[in-house]
Structures are given as structure tokens and as C-alpha cells.
Image (cartoon, rainbow, N blue to C red; front, top):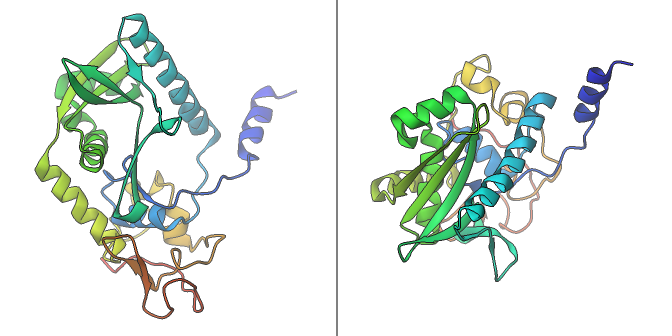
Amino acid sequence: MDITALITEAYRAEKRGKPRQYIGASGIGQQCLASIAYSYRGYPETAPEPQLKRIFRDGHKIEYDVVKDMRKAGMHVMETDPLTGRQWRWTGYGGLVMGNADGLMEIDGETFGVEIKSMNMAKHQEFVKKGVKGSHPSYYDQMQFMMGLSGLRKFVLIAYNKNNSAYHHQYIDFDDFRWAYLTTKVEDVLTNRATRIATDESDWRCKGCFKRDACWNGLVPDEKSVRTCGNSHADRMGNLQCEVCDGTTCTDWKLYEPRAT
């Protein structure tokens, strides 16, 4: 019995979940606008390798353990919104953009958003040395995006080293200029001005992208709707409009493609 092969095959056989259909805070820091656009439109993802799936799974487990450690140290962390019973969530542009935080906590009378990340030794050391803006700019943008959506003005990033269980944290202030830059990215995506970061799929930046098959190989979404149609765009209020249809139904569906670089 090849136990390793059986486990690998079990992960490969997992049914693909329904893709997200919004611009998420965790993805806004990506350099490639096309990748963000395919996520917003709900195009299917290229399935991650089994090992990467397990890394994601372990990351979620570590988040719970970090919160337990914080509470053990006497800190009060609110993981969920008491009004919804779910993770803290903020939206914008009529619900077309969204950010989910790992929690909220109060420090010296001020409310902070909480973001928890697990890192390997090299990435953790880089974070300690450079700070999040230098080591993980996508995490920095994720927190700036959530602050812009929520009205919060401070976040704390807590990083857990998966190799030696070391902790490091950094407090982040709201950056008006970064928020303005991120909103221009959102509006470029919503108004069909997104372009690819690369000229062909062999580019190293495309190899790890979960939207690469949709982007380069024409992977078609299950739902042929106004949102997934290449003829449609959205305004700042989140209203979908179409160059061909009436904006509520799709009568001439077209595969979405980014603009030429």
C-alpha cells in the first residue's frame, strides 16, 4: 500500500468549491490586475497541488492557536462579529469588494483590526528585518484595504514562525495614499481596464497564479451570467451594466479577456 500516493490522490479528487465572486482584500495586493479581475468575475481556479492545500489547511489551524495564545496572555480578541456570528467583514462598491479580518481587539482604548499569518523561517526573519511593507507588501495592502473599507485606522499583524514557534508583530497605521492607489486598482478591474502582468503563460509570475487556466487556456465558468460575461462592467455603486444586454440578464454571453498589455 502506497500511503503517500493514496493521500495525494484523495486531495486531487476533492470536489472544487464554488469560486469567489468579488475583489477580496487578500488578493488586492497582487500586481496582476487580470488575476484580480478573474476573481471578481468568479472564474474557476486552477486547483492547487495537494501539498499546497495542506499548507493552507495548517495555516487556518495556526490562526486558532494564535488566538488561544493571545487569550492565554490576557488579551481579549473578538474573532466574530456579534451581530452576524461570523468573521468580521466589510464591503464596498455595492458588495463587489470585500475584506475579512481575523479579529478585533482594543489597545489603549482604540480598536485595532487583527491579522494573523503563519510563515516559514526565511519569511518570518524577513518580516522581522524589513517590516511587513518591505517583506510582504500584499499583506500590507490587505490590511490597508480592510481599514479603508471599515473605517478602522489601525491594524496589528501577528506572525507565527512555523519552524520554531517564534512570534513577531507589527502595528500598522492607515495609509491614505495606499488606499487611494488600491481603489484605482479596483476601478480599473470593474471598468474592464485590467491587463495581464505577463505576455505569455510561461512567465514565472503566472505559474503560481490560481487563475492561470482561466487567463491563458480559456477555462469557462460554470455560470454564464452578466458578472462572468466579457461584455459587462460595473460602476462605483456596484451596478452591473452591459454593452449588449439590459444589465440583468445575459443574452449574448462572451468569454472575459483582459485588455491587451
